[in-house]
Amino acid sequence: MSEMALRVPKLPGPGSILASQLRYQLTLLARNPRAIAAGLILPAALLALERGSAQHITMAQAAPKIAGLVALSAVAIAFFTHANGLVVAREEGVLRRWHASPLPSWAYFAGRMLATMAVTAAAGLILVLVAVAMTGVHLTAHAVVGLLVVDMLAALALAAAGTAITTIIPSAQSAQPVLMLTYIPLIVLGGAFGAITSLPHWVNTAMTYLPAQPAIDAASRALQHGTIMSGHDLAVLAGWVVGGLLVSFRFFAWDPHRPGHARPAGASTTLRSAK
Amino acid sequence: MSAIIVKDLVKRYGRFTAVQDVSFEVASGQVTALLGPNGAGKTTTIEILEGFLAPSAGTVEVLGANPRTGGRAWRARIGLVLQTTSLDAQLTVSEALMMFGALYPKPCRIAEVLDLIELASDARTRIGALSGGQRRRVDLGLAIIGQPEMLFLDEPTTGLDPEARRRLWSVIENLTAAGTTVLLTTHYLDEAQYLAQRVIVLANGRVAADATPDELRAMGGVPTIRYRVPSEAAALPPALSMHVGGNVLQMPSADVTADLAMLVGWARENDVDLTGLEVGPPSLEDAYLALTREGELSHV
Image (cartoon, each protein chain N blue to C red):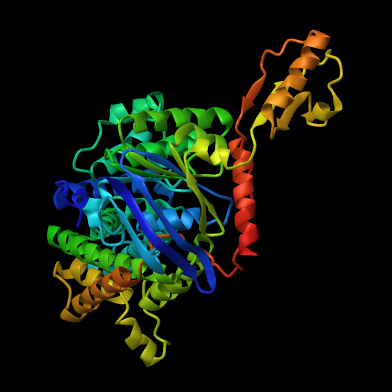
């Protein structure tokens, strides 16, 4: 190696880089509130619609509904908005610019996912507080802590899955259709709007291995008992975190999708005249 | 010492060969322009040097390292202006500089960069609200925030109006005066002439010329006599008037002495002032067109 290559500057440490990335991602989320509001307004509106029939109910009755709407919010923010934002950033060349800098890949993902988790947890908390105000159910501090833990783990699993799915989305135009195709079944069949009893057994079984239903179950349990999730729910969500991250680190594209060079040599060699 | 060493570089996309047997070196502190028509292989070459693409064959070394394996420490020593502007529209100019500056061991002061890119008054403006030329200057600011030893500028002024181009040139001039090595790709010959000490012309993925701008001009053929003919002047002799277009005499001359004698004789006879008369090598554009045309013909 030449003399030039031996000059290795001391780079900033992981802590300061991560803090900077977290601040960057939170700034972007704060400056684009409509994307986040979609994950808050729809569940809040559904809560309001339920209000008439949900007054003076117990937490045992309210918890599955509240948990379903918290999960709906989490999927909208941590899966849909997160993945869509990544595809748009990639296609606009923003990711390429980061990739060209000394930013470690892990720091970009970590900053983005931590920001997503924070916003998802805040939205979940707001929804629960709205639900409590509307229904008058009693909420313990344990329940709130349990719910936040579940919501953040679910957000991490959904963000990891969302990052992984961007590897099969070739353009910003195709992001919404692909994400809708996965988002709607995940939410509806997962039970965010209540359990669907007429589904075939194998579909119900499959749903227990996707991230939405374990998140709903765990959130419901946290609201009622203030306890952390079951082993199965934890394993499924952790599995999605690990699987999503592995797929992302292997296949994630930083550069905008470009059509192949299927052209003969010498094609399009036109001169642009100087101004 | 060479900041860039390229040896027998080849890049293929399936059956299409974008770059074929390209070799060159760039000395530290030098500004080199990579010139060529669309599809000549400029961007492919620069993307290989930036580490975005792997070569199909050959070797490249930038600042003593392979760009594909240079890692973070190597990336901290280079700066890039990509072909297209790629910035978060929601960030302010100073926020973007701060975010990127946090990645480098010795970043420039934000205020210093803002002054250099002439955007101090827009420090708190969101990037989405800036004009195309201003965004391009933010791009340049992000490229230099880490005080790079090597700067890649991929068509930095494409799409800018003449005034914005001039402003960006002055920023680049300031940087190069500080000793930064620059590799610039451009379509604009005036840009290459103004900024670069050396020009590498690519045509059809091959090096068609590697020379200083003056040497390149000399490759364009015989010297040229240029003179703006006053509108009220008497008619020029036919041997000269056949080279007049839009009141400007632009005459390639194989015998400058004889042709000038003819012009001076006409001027004396008709009492015409020859102020503004120029005799010089062919224009860079003439040389460039000749070279790229040769490149295309040799490819056929």
